[in-house]
Amino acid sequence: MSAVPTWPPLACPDCGAPMPLRLNPWRRGFVYLCSRRPFGCRGLASAHPSGAPQGIPAPAEIRRARRFCHAVFDQLWKSAPALYRIQETEPSERHRAEQAIRRQARKRCYRWVAERLGLAEAEAHISRLADLGQLRDFYRLARGARMSEILEWAHEREAAEGRRGARKRA
Image (tube, rainbow, N blue to C red; front, top):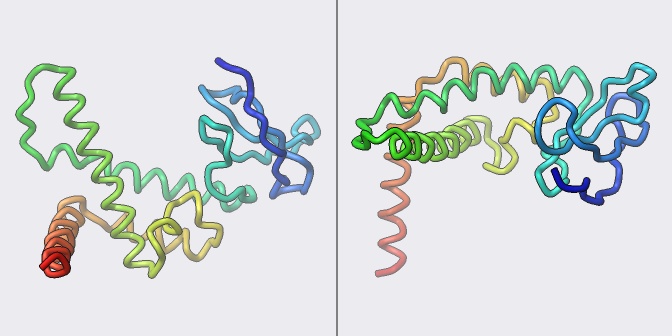
């Protein structure tokens, strides 16, 4: 693992103390950990490989709600390959095809949730939600959703956007 990137500390959402960027002690990568951790504060925020914060740092109650949202949401988009007839038979090629399907499904699921919550796509990501009410609404939507319905919605939307794009070019 390379050296820790240089990023300014964040303010801990739980206690207000500085949260410097450190090597993640639980998995690969980096994490912002509260400097008062030895004294019981559990404040933390995920970081991108570059060291940039992932989403909005949040207090414990919001982090817990985000974990619940991820549990149902991730299960939803990860189920997408089962809806396709994957032609690849060689294991590494099949895996690559499934990963591509999952990436697209995740984007489509976030767009679907964003539309229903009345948010811009960039603001509908779980790590950007900092309000318990929005997280509850997100959870209910993801829990009640079926990937097949989202896929149908996405195909209709993408077809309509394609028709609009064709009109603009004409």
